Each structure stands twice: as structure tokens, then as C-alpha cells.
Length: 310
Image 1 (cartoon, rainbow, N blue to C red):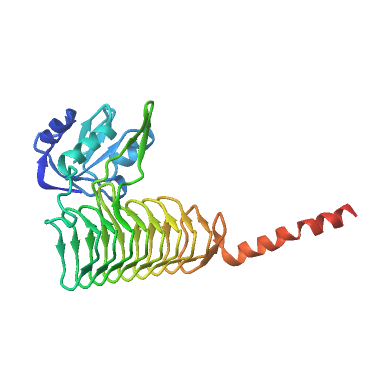
Image 2: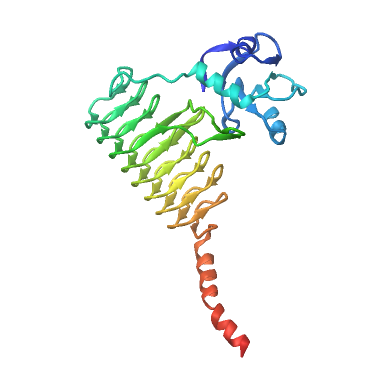
């Protein structure tokens, strides 16, 4: 997420009440998670395991819970609770705005687009030309929808990321202030849920078609011309490259990449990155032919045991 205006390090520190290391006027352009940070961004880190990764990332401002040596050309914000203070910044720069109408006055809707009754369109939503949005769709704030998009009833675009920190008193949610971006010619079935990014975008690429009852997690990027069948669940921070096919009830873990033109057959569990151009099946996912051979061998175990007993 980029701030409306470039901020000074001193003013950011004042918002969260933290110490800082760096010039008072060190420029701060925005804030992001580590997998999408750019120069000028704030990234937060609160575990020693990830200190080096954060300090060596593209981010030039590191919100951290320990006084460490500041890398050259960067600045530090020293906090006793970076998770809490990252949330403070989210609330400060993109606070929740209650709706005042079923279709927000700040939303823009392109020529030829039809929005059926009982659909909610939030603040600062942009919808392109010649779209068809069926009834009871919920389009949360800041969502961007391209041209020629069809969205069926009951779908929710822009729910919060499933991202929590465990504390003694319970789970503390990381506030989501990112967006959902739906590119041109996308089709989305009924009762789908696509979560917004924590600070970045969850993106559905042009020409992709999504069946009913599919879930896509925060900050995931779905490529162009993909096919995703019903009851598939894709976790956050996944990259699905172009022309990937996922049949029904596929489960995908977080922070992996599925290569171009991969085909993932029904009821497959994807626990690691997969190469493109291959067909996969099973849990854990393996190349389909190999997995089917293994299943055939397993069926022969009783026969083999009987022979051994004789």
C-alpha cells in the first residue's frame, strides 16, 4: 500500500510512538508485506528467525522489535510490538469507512454494466464496461474490476486476510488494507470468496474462469486464462501462473508457485511448488502417472503378502 503522500520517518515514528534510527526526513512511501516490498516501503518483523530477511529485503524501512545495526541506506523503527504498530499504520492511512448506500457514491461503474438487485458495491470500487454482476454479490472497498466480467450470486470480493498472531488472550488479526483486482474477461461463479491483500493486491488474471464455491486467499496472484473448478481452496501468497487448470476440491498451501499450464486433478493436495506443463494428482501432489502406478502397487499388497505367507 502506498501512502497518499510521501511521509517523513519522524512523522511515522510519532504515529506509532516508537524510537527510530535514521534521518528525521528519511522518505517513507508506503508499507507492505515482505514478499511484495519495494524501496520506500515499511516491512515489519517480530521474530529473530526473519530479521536478516527483512533487513536485507527491498524495503528501506524496517519495523523491528530489537535494536540492531541499521543497513546502509535504510532506516529502522524500533517497537516493542511491530505487529500491533503495523496495524496502527494500516488504521491511520486506510481506516475503515462505513457504507452510506448499497452502491457507494464514490464507486465508478462503466458503460453497459448491469448490477442486479441486492448487490453491495463499496467505497472507491471501480467496475469496467459491459460487466454483469448478479444479485447478492458483495464487493468490498477499493476493489478493481475490469471489462466484460461476470460475477454470479453470493460471491464476496475483498474479505479480510486469514492472518493472525497468537497471543495469551487469543488471536490478534492483522488488519487488511489491500485490494482485490479482477482483470478483463474474468468469470466468477456463485458463492466464491476472494480475500483482499494485507497491503497489496489479490489478482485474478485476464480470461480466467472460476467455478462455484472457490476460495482464494490474500495476496494470491492467479494468472491469465486459468480454469479453477468448484470447491478448490487456494491459500494466501500463492502464484498460479498462466493457463493452469485445477479440477474440483484441490487444496493449495500458502506461498508456493504453480507453473504455467500445469493441470491439477480433482482432490489433489498441493503442499509445495509445482513445475508447469505437467499433470498432477494425489496428496501430496505428484505427477499423475507415477501416483496412479503407486496406487496400483498398493492394491497388490494383499496378494504379495499371501504369496509370502505361503
